[in-house]
Image (cartoon, rainbow, N blue to C red):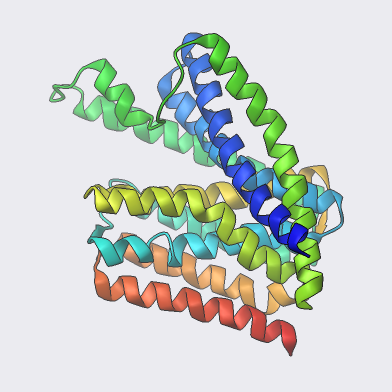
Length: 328
């Protein structure tokens, strides 16, 4: 049993590490090929940082562990709102007044409702996956349009150089300048991701069996929390450095990609039946979190310690509910 826990934790760590290597290597190579920074940020970085969730969901779906495949995404979206926004608010006030946040939060809310409706059909099919990917293309296209419009409107009064603009568009630390190292990062990332997914799924299913709970519970809790750790660590460090203003946008973008890219790609490859427990409880919590996120953006709230406590306690209560329902 010790091996199962080691496989689960080691697999999650390998997924995070390999995903980071993949992003750094891919960004370096893309920059060398002259690909615009905006496109790199919206595609390579966005997909690269979601790679752990993608590989876990794909591996779980192929192994017939549908609870982990869907629970990973639903649980991550819940953790993103309650933990990734809640914990940093305990450290420093988190403003929710980013430009375009309300529009993107509304899109995320609509996407969440559509995704929930598809789940209540019983099985996410190939057609559902194609529909989700079409919505992803719309989201990316709108992001490109909005970014270009913002740059055009502020171009005349902007005093920063083009290099500074690129740094604003893309936030990837330690991108290797040597193309040989970049290629090595890319290869190691591509090797490490499927290996990490294999270890995670194997460990998660064994742990679920030993705990006497369903694979959906492990997917919604341990796996979902593990794959949300990079976002949580990033927002906590941003709060410590008094740069927490970008937290809301990061959460919105991550949740949209989880639903449209991760589940869209996964169910386009292989249909996923939805466990009953997720339909009864977790999907509703995810929708409530989406509504809450939209309220934060629409009201341009500043999340202080009181909100931080509320969101963190709400996540603990949610986890308790997941296990309690599974034992009923």
